Length: 154
Image 1: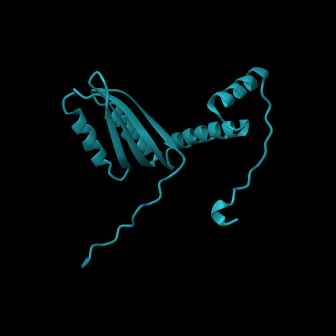
Image 2: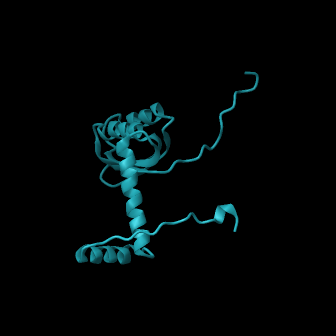
Image 3: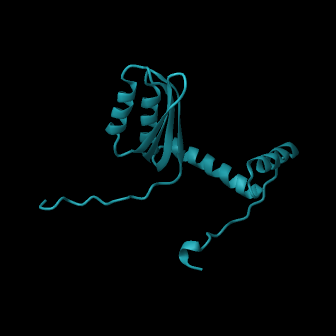
């Protein structure tokens, strides 16, 4: 087996659960289609750890800012685009979809120190015309796509 296909070592732990929580866990595992309780608990732990890292504020993380806004609000789309350009180092990409009732959903892919990305999300979500928004961060990063090199003759 080559290095890429090598599975990382795992540690086994034992936990005790009240009957009701155990039943709720098994129901969730079945409803969401997890292969096992371990897989479900791994997913929950990753989410909690990502939230902990976000609160800590100094870890580089990747995530999305999802907003729903009224596209009839004067200059809102331009303001959102300008903010994304202002934070060019953190904003990787964005996608917007026009919905019914003059609403638009926009998903902005971001990466950077959690505290910085949280500040960007807060600034966007607080704009007049934004109906709701949420930042979702994960404890992962996007590898650099290209290394900047000086232009010829410089």
